[in-house]
Length: 490
Image (cartoon, rainbow, N blue to C red; front, side, top):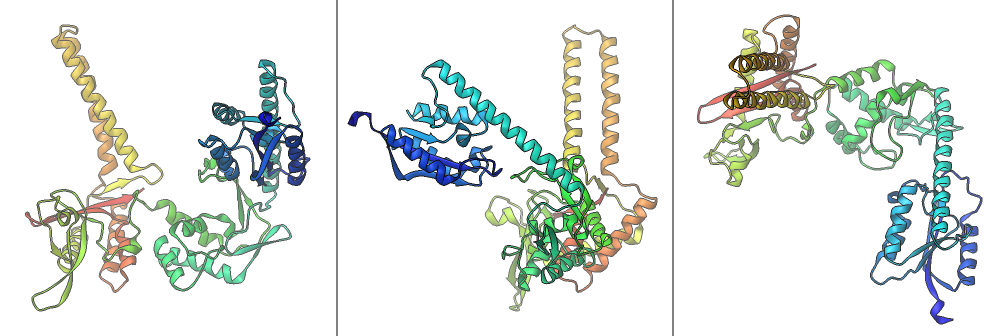
């Protein structure tokens, strides 16, 4: 008998849909009975239980992954995995096949004790049919649940865990006054004081405020609050993929009037939404609240293009002062020093802005908010590159005698016209007009920023406002010139 003994593992899962007919304890008892009857040794270390976890995605089941890890190990501690039904192992047939194949390579079988199979190809066919039926049931159940929750959302019912500012009572969000005060403060700082999300998070943390879970505020938690319509009385449903951070297309969202009391007015929420939608946020830009100077991160070295970073130095008289220097020069990878005192640099920038305001002449780049400017620039550059390739090919065709001179000239004219059209599009994307209402409004924006920069406002606020009109500043120390690159969001 000894040679017939096998070592096994139990995998027990109760799904989130709560439709299973057997509890975890019942599954465990029946699996152990099967193991004893079939000479399978089960150690307590190899009983894997997952309660309230969906079977749709294996990578979201930690106990399942732990069991698979043991099964693949060189020690081979498991010969067989017992489940109550194949649906407990996986409800996604594709994943089921992948994991079962992996286990088979490691000589580990998966057995459903309530769905015995015949040996051979016919048994494998029946197993695939069972898996397909389980997946079909899962999809159908998911669809029914989704339809029910959609209908509930259409009636204005909230169906998620309560966010900061609320707690759930009798199936609806109820305001928590001390938390609601934090929500109001966030919106007011963002709208009325024009503070950035990082600066708001920093201010809240320093004053002892905490998130719903008792943690410290981060930029993303402030962003979530500012974008959540629940706070002005609406509910938002089907906003993101379940269990993922991917936001769905706006056309799939359901936004309805809720049955709960709002914390802020619709006007305040809309003002925050308007600012968020119209602000240009370059990718990977450092939060303004972390800058040591309001010009940090904006000024670029004319020799290598790297940012000028700040440091503290001492004058001959022993006074401490701040200065900027090329980041790469500090590391030894740039050969041109661009050191300049912070006072001299900020004076030059303010003089440049003042000159623009005095003359009224301004050139600026137009940046589309809803369609990334970087993406648009890349698209146009690709079109121009393709025209260069076409031009080379028609020239080669003419030189090789494939095309006549007339054909070459005609093709050349078409390419030239297309290039001019694209360049015109590029020009309209980048260049602002020299006159008209749009430029007048932009000059007013510059004036507002200039007034703040010359005031005693804090560094974070100055940095936040300056980045609304300036993309970068090129400093050429050898030529003693400063070029300010302006932009206007569209």
